[in-house]
Amino acid sequence: MTGALKTTQIDTVRAWVDGWVISRDTPPPVPEPWGYRVDVGLPGHLVRHVLPAPTPALIQHLTGTITAPGTWLKLCAPADLIAPWLPAGWDIEPPEFMMTAALRPEPVKAPAGYTTAVTTRSGVTVARLLTTAGEMAARGQLAVAGRTAVVDRVETAPGHRRRGLGSVVMRTLTAAAHAAGATGGVLVATPEGRALYERLGWRLHSPMTAAVLRSASG
Image (cartoon, rainbow, N blue to C red):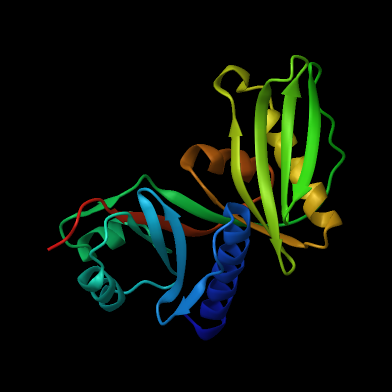
């Protein structure tokens, strides 16, 4: 990784972490030699360590000192690279993908039978698509960190999928982020979400691997 690419990677990951902690209402990230520590404080997800450039030495250090179940590693690398570096007791989650995009707002309208509701509170903007009965059909949220919008928790209810609602939510969030001064976006997608985001112009920045310590080590 060249110096310029490494700087871009670190900046992108830092923007994602900064927005993620706002979105999830956690304490600010703590810079560490390997990246960032976030004290999430949830059952099964106590702490996460984010590594923009994981190496065997960094992972060996972390896994050799971490003993608390519910500790997560979020690693900017594919699982097939990471897996041989992890000791027994660490589980690898399904693959994820960090994606980025330049924000270009487009006109957006809710499909027939749905209405759009957008609210902002404590720095988090939530876009929801509601049925005429008030049922939430799709939703997503974002937080702006500097000039970057971090998109989070985009989902469509099972009974409302394959109707383009995810695209409406994303376009609604893009417009809100642009209005808030953001010029770029970053998110971490599942394989299913990746297909949606690529159709909307988002591009892969880095494969992501999540590893979690499920039970006490040692």
